[in-house]
Image (cartoon, rainbow, N blue to C red; front, side, top):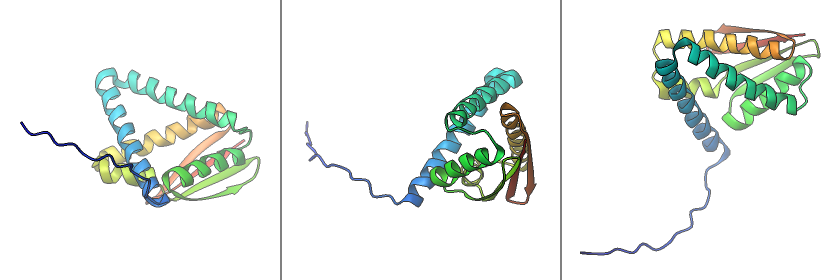
Length: 160
């Protein structure tokens, strides 16, 4: 029997911000798709609804801790996270009564399409699910939420 002893080597972080964001988007999207598939398979529509409600409740709690009170507060908080954590390309505009977040490139969506191998029907269902999620998120703050998809560009509007 042969024994091999490896020398210990400390691994130093070497990834740049872009690489980190790509990997975060990839792993987060895969976790989300895996969870949704599992919940749908074992919990049916009711399970999916409960899962989405729980996910939304965590977002609402986080945004409330950040002090979100207006549509502009909400799009600022959402955009800051999307850009810094996932590397999405977004623009925001508006005021305390109406604000928009425009995804010129959504890193999570791109990762889901690339690594999730979604078919057209799944992409359409996810778009509808995202729209409903944004409407329900808006309601939690007393806003009206709407999503508009124009090809790969998505515009979220929140109105007080």
